[in-house]
Amino acid sequence: MDSILSECKKQITLRWGTLDTLEFRMAFLSAAILPEIFGGVCYDPQEDRWDYGEGLFEKFLSEVNSFESDIKPIRWKLHEFEKWM
View (spheres, helix red, strand yellow):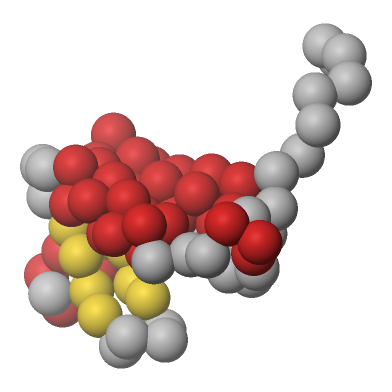
């Protein structure tokens, strides 16, 4: 991991809460897409887990789907679309 981190020049921090399902999905999948595109690393401080490499998006999407399948319908929170910017 140290050799991979030594090549990284930028850091992006994404913060979100799991109570907002849209925010959770977008942030978690962005955390997977960015390292996959740019050859970086994703660190999850809650799990103390480092992830990198191809297939990261599919792995995280599976985790998101698993998390969302456990959410009771009353806890779902989505944003209503208002208009394009």
